[in-house]
Amino acid sequence: MAPFRIERLNKQDRRDFDCQVEPLNRYLRTQANQDQRRQFASCFVLVQSSTEQVVGYYTLSASSIAMGDLPESSAAGLPRYPLVPVARVGRLAVDHRFVGQGLGSVLIYDALKRARESDVVAYALVVDVKEAAEAFYKKLGFQLLTAEPRIYFYPIPSKSSQSNP
Image (cartoon, rainbow, N blue to C red; front, side, top):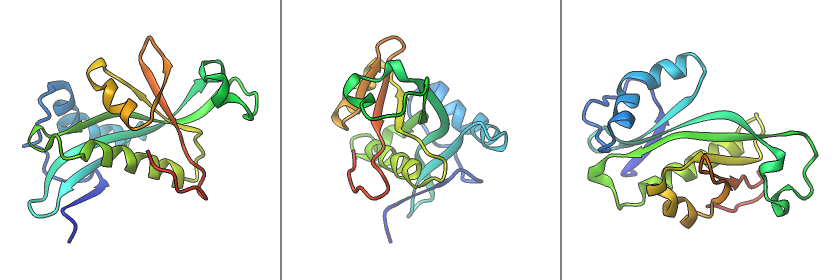
């Protein structure tokens, strides 16, 4: 059995989750289910198989970015519509007891995979990045889209491509 699995948020026990950022803890405990029911964002949780403990999560929703915000090299060959469809990771957190195990990367890879496999097309995975997490996203190959607010993007490989962040 795999040590972890990722599944859509449902009735998992989230009371002990602690990423040491209270707004992220509170969101998972009190608002994530509501956002899912209202079809505002999907929430996916990383569960430790042996304990059933939620050790991480992320949210994913449809969004768009202005074509003019893309670097020329990324915009080349794209249709010249004013907006580009993207998938947005709104929140991402890992329980502090599991930091340093690469689980944040696992969550990002899962978000990229879900966006790529969706019937709703998205050009890139987009994240609003806090300064403290900038190195994490750069290491995964994300590129700066806008400096203020600090938004990074990663072009989603086509379904036939096997490229990973």
